[in-house]
Length: 406
View 1 (cartoon, rainbow, N blue to C red):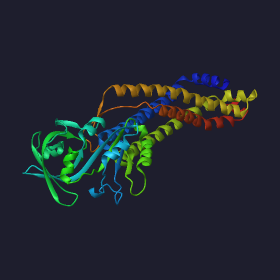
View 2 (view 1 turned 180 degrees about the horizontal axis):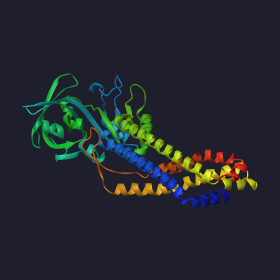
View 3 (view 1 turned 60 degrees about the horizontal axis):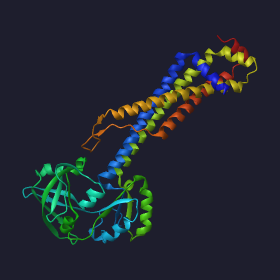
């Protein structure tokens, strides 16, 4: 305790140098907190955006003869209602929406475009699951007698489609025959991803099944009440539905979110690089300042040694001084980082769209307690480590040399 009090007094003796070190530590801490908070907010936002844009928390599909996503419809899921009933027995499951994906041609008569189609259950998809597409014009597909289609914005633009227009869909059935179906455009939507907007469309599940001449589905998309339950529910469903080569394949959103992992890896690398640079700057600056302190306090060190203070205690005195500077600067940085994070988040700054996306997003800086604790510990340890070499140099001084130091 006496060492800490002594360290605080010594810090106050040279206010200008101490203020410079504290400012550097505070700025470094705040920069790490803002950068880390931005990365954490992006990770969380991109994760939920991926899940809510249609991937869901879990997906169940037929395992098929291969492990790719292009398994033929002959290997698709059947007995959907039985599977759904077993899935919904878990109270952590919010919804289980069946889908049928297909590829084919969309034609207005004058022009045809290759498309990627998805058949959905409107009540389950847009109701319980909450997969609400961002509508540009018109409405979503609904249950009814006529065949309805929602076209993505890019596809609608290339085919000059608007609500009320007729669109003919053509695709190969499960038997390999070519089938066609006349549908009515009821809405235009956007996925936010340019490539998908140019080729995708949505119909009702029964429309897709009629087009492909099948009663099966490609997959069942599961939405949970809490994202944190994904792994536990996946394990539970494996026990319920079975495991092995004939059992349905269960995959989590993480297994399917390649783009998410690419972005996370990029941000993690940038944040780590930034952290290394800031830490090196703090170590060099603090080490230089502590060396100057030792040089200026040579007579004081000699006097302490002359009255019987051990070399180990001399060294400890300077290390504790460094740790104290790290603690004070770290807390100042935490305060500044929190203020910056809160202020920037509330400012409502709109960020430009990421690569391949068509819509931007509001700037958000997350406040992550674990990150704040880590940054504080790093700054304390860094300043303590930066003080070790100057402290060792002070402890090695001879009494006569120290007393004669000018």
